[in-house]
Amino acid sequence: MRAAVVRYTTRPERADENEQLIRAVFAELAERQPAGFWYRAVRLDDGVTFVHVALLPEDGNPLSGIAAFGEFVSGIGQRCVEGPIAAEGTVIGSFSS
Image 1 (spheres, rainbow, N blue to C red):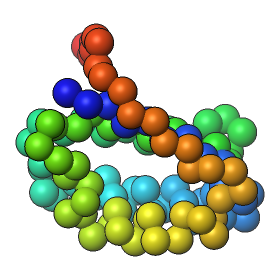
Image 2 (cartoon, helix red, strand yellow; image 1 turned 90 degrees about the horizontal axis):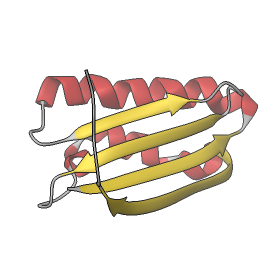
Image 3 (cartoon, rainbow, N blue to C red; image 1 turned 120 degrees about the vertical axis):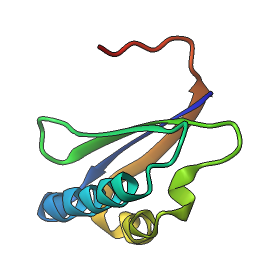
């Protein structure tokens, strides 16, 4: 399983808009229920920094077929003052209860 981590900082006046766009992505994911996919998005306490973590199946990225994700990424550059900075890695452990 591959992991993708993305971190960025939005313009203060665009942070709430960014959160709404993220919520739309999760709403569409809830409808589609892609198998073998884990995704979290966190807005840090500073109110403008966001971190996304996805565990992706080996055969692709389910986000690529999500219309709301396309809308989210289409304007990310205009909403950000820093980043997005993306990194991929390999999952070495996972726990949830």
